Amino acid sequence: MRAPADRPRPAPHAHDSPREHLRRLMAWWSLLADLSFSDLLLFVPGQLNSLDELPDDTAGTAPHGENPTRRLGSDAQITVIGQIRPTTGRTLYRDDHVGLCVTASERPLVSEAFARGVIVTGEGLRVPGDRRARITAVPVTYDGETIAVMSSEVTPRFTDIRDPGELERTYIATFGRLARMVAAGSFPYRGVDIAGEGTPRVGDGLFLTDETTRIGFASPNAVSALHRIGVGGNVQGRRVRDLDLGPDVVGRAMSGGIPAVGEVEHRSVTVQLQALPLTDTPVRNALVLLRDVTELRRRDRLLISKDATIREIHHRVTNNLQTVSSLLRIQARRLESREANRALEEAVRRIRAIALVHQTLSSETTDDVDFCDVAETLTETMRQSITFPERPIEFTVSCEAGMLRSQTATSLAVVLNELLQNAVDHAFPQLWEIEDQALEAAPALDESPIGRVEVEISRPSADLLSMVVRDDGVGIPPGYDTERSGGLGTSIVRALCGADLGGTFEVRRRMPPPGSEAVVQIPLRTIA
Image 1: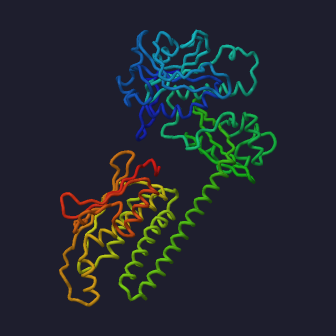
Image 2: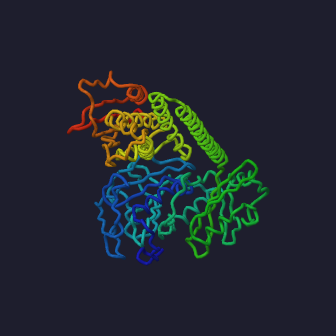
Image 3: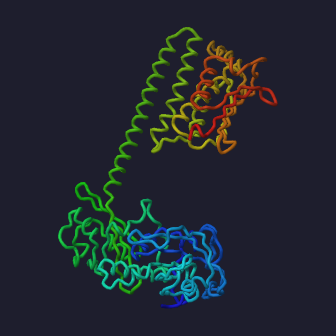
């Protein structure tokens, strides 16, 4: 095997680094542990507690072609930053050794792999422990430099089996090929992340192909998985393209040099195929992992159906609330009493506040609502419906609420609607005089704003939500008591803030005057 300085350097990828390369390796290495029937330990130079402490420029600490780990002395420290146990065999280590720091002399095979940049195999004492193990130390290469060493460790008795079966021999040989790719810097695959569902396990089934996609080996579980999707008979010796497995994932993987994933559905069964190109030799082969994802896809379909149903319910609730609002507006137009007319208008605005949250949820795929959008829409609706061109009120919104659960957002929307309504009703009594003049076709008045209403929603701390509605109007009367004073709107706010949201509500004079401010504070633990 060539030294690291002689290896070709892969093309760089955006946002790539030695640390990310090791993260990708640890995302894939359950496959390596199962193929080798061994525990895997990942060593890096120095004393670290986790992979997060590894600097991004590990491979750049020495001139190109000079491996900084070669300067490690016998008393130099190396640290275990990763550990995984096999699901196909017994583990040597019951304890978690991540963060364990040992000297280079205690791990001579690992130290040699660091220094020479080649795979080193032999027997040695387990550290910690005093029993011997069969160790394969694999240098992890990134951009031509050894940045870590992966140690495969298994009891010597396992390797002394005189006649291992074809499955064991194939698994160990495949691990050897992937280990050579790790040492060459071509595995894990650069710029390729693991899918959200993770890597299929070796035990789920695998088969190997040659350069013509002819299957040379198939595990028993792979044969069973293929039978479930309609591939009968013996598959060994047959080409993948002749098995009618849908998209040619094997061909894509071998031609592109990166993994390819596809799924095959047969009746009620869905099997996922993930093809990995083996590039340790001039002739490319493929390792294909199979996984029965029937239950996962069934759950996905149920979730999609449930989400669509919930969105449709929110849409119908919105339509029904809008119908109720329309009926109330029709009734209001038929009334001659100004007081009754205004009461119905307030009821319509309350219904609109609730409908707005449902309208937002009807277009979302989650049960969470961006309350800043709700607050801005409510405030704009209030401005348009309650002020007049002759004497407008200026509204401003400052919001950092973030995402809230739908139930919380609905209650807060009603609270905000009431606070805006109260600010307009009580802070600016002259508004109603102007409305009466407008209805009597009075001459146009001064168009300067009567006043201003500010909405500020914030999170003062990690566990608190604050909503403040301020105005610069006449202020609250002397002796005003938040717990006792106020009309229907204030009663609604008190009930929602206390019983529904578990928070507090207070109305006080604005400092400095003029004006007043209504303050609502909600503990986030009640809305999480």
